[in-house]
Length: 367
Image (cartoon, rainbow, N blue to C red; front, side, top):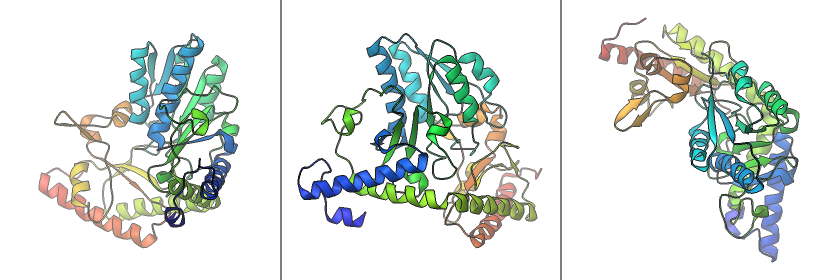
């Protein structure tokens, strides 16, 4: 990336620097395509998964309107990222019907219900591969089968999953999949959309100079794309090792927390989750207080969001049937490639100490 920044060039320019930049972009595109089992020509670069999600949903809706396609139902799961839910609901203004499919108490989509929601009127179904809050892996093969039976297109938000678990677009029979560089240790600000050669091409949501076959015009950020390509190559080569490393660290963290008598449990029950991902509920603990107390030592997150001056539980936890009180006690942590056993042991000690202090401060009983 530093080499590219030191030799700036537009990959669309006809001179030697432009050609070198274009070659670097092509090499990165090929590596990313290899990671997901796609052809390089099926990869369109974007600024990240949010833009890719918007391009998939809005772009396909516009394609349907322009081509006279009569299907006007969009189905999304209740636990999708806001980058899916917001553009989906925006499509109502264009006359589309948006259906939200429920999930079970673990956060996994209910395919029995989904099969009743997808019919001959369904244009597109969008279900994420892995949830960004709980880490739960969705049964994509079953989802795709439901779509195929009804002739619906299928989009998958793969941002959380690509580079962490095997995810092959041809094997899954996906039409579209979004992804993001920074979720696989690459630079922020670049992502992409897989568009199957056999699927309709989304209409652009930006207008400009016609780059990337006009699907996503704009000058390619060459250094970011190069970094993305290197990150994808590392993820491909380390997929199995990283997965096992994450699982071992997550098990170790849970064991250490139990040794410290931190009363917490996994909210995902027996659902499969991303390796290294933990979403925990600690009764008697305000998770936001815990996160604030540990903000300089352990990087935790919650699902809560401040809306109109009120802190509300995450839509994901609410969709899982969790009460506001229980949801306020949920925190999440990810054990990643560069964490060590020493990191995990220290984190467990710090979390246990903070839980004790939070409980004493609030006067809540230890359950």
